[in-house]
Length: 349
Image (cartoon, one colour):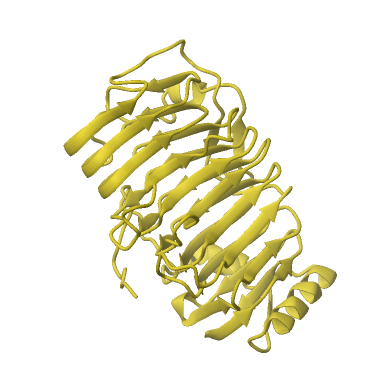
């Protein structure tokens, strides 16, 4: 598989499972239960013991693990030893299922067994429904049909990860936000060869996609819909914000088939289409997007920069704070318009 050693995000942050913990993080995560063994049962036992004894961290030492459905109670951090903690799952299996609020998964590599568009294994890395303040950070996630899946009102953040080769033809999702009230912030990640980098579906989900770098879609099936930031047509009341990202070497960048949205401050380079819109919902495309070697800047029902009433009623998400809380402004983008989310033209470069 690809090597991503030394890759950094648009904000020059170090990304991936081998980024060292800061001194403050090491101290905060030093009280832990150490997993004994490499199976679902071994990790589940460690999680259950940590929850019972009030220990906040479960540590997975380096090794090759095979899981199918580890259930993570609320309040736990699962910490690996970087890319040397390699976790895979069985055919059509799932690695983690989150059962409670305030769960973090960090510093590990997870592999779903199918890095091609072929229909080999309909695997899932993580599923989290009806839970709040979930964080997946500094991981490598690849070869799943559905990689990181949030739904039914979950509130979550995915950051500083390398997410690639989730390219099952017809599925192939990097990050998923589905169902009424689901809110997902995706920030400071590297993406490569995913059919859809991020998508939403059903009801009124939301995602904010900020400061990410999509390298290409080169190993995906060319016949597929390869819009990287996608909103399925069933997400009729869905919303999304795409801001300050780098989209490169792609068949398509943004596919707004439904929902209301804001697009601002992105770089589109070497792409077939930047923004394809069939949604009739309110939207705003700011004039600080940059287009380099783009065949179609706009396709569909809109062919230029659109500005409606400001602010339009779209949720705005702030990154998880030091208390482990993700702030969501449900019907206000004043965080952007007052400056805290605003970047001048070209800041992402």
